[in-house]
Length: 230
Image (tube, rainbow, N blue to C red; front, top):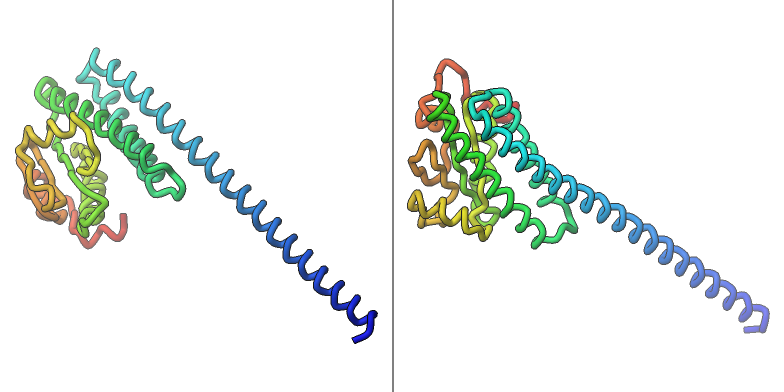
């Protein structure tokens, strides 16, 4: 092989190496940029969630002054569900710190318990026929938990008087432990668990069963088959 051929081969190898390196660097920079954008978005959502928590806390204090104001109570109830949806979004987002999520879920559980206590007070003091359902679930080894959540959401949309509160049994929280102790919930392996108007129900319950348990108006068509349309 002559010198010209050797030089040509070297130039080819050098060019290939340079192009490969350039592609790698560009890919790395794009990946870093995308990760940075995702991290910024998650941080923004987390801060937004914390801000919403503070706003909800203030509303609790305001409602205490006039608990029978149906407009304020309805608005508070809807904001609680919106906050729960944001938390679910954060929980499902890739790259979010599990420890941060657990902390937020723990605090959200406290907010829900406070809302539940207010709802109980309103039901008694204001003669309001609310139907409450405390829903205990787990993201681990619970095949029917997601399905149960869909059923509860479906019924809540059909019946405005229903108030649902969702609690992750894997979250360590003293207030949540007290709630479980209050109703004698010991076997957390039989999930999902529902506490409806003070009565404990183990295992999945479809919409028809829940309508009977809650003594709801059966004239409203709430067949579980309609879940696919919600």
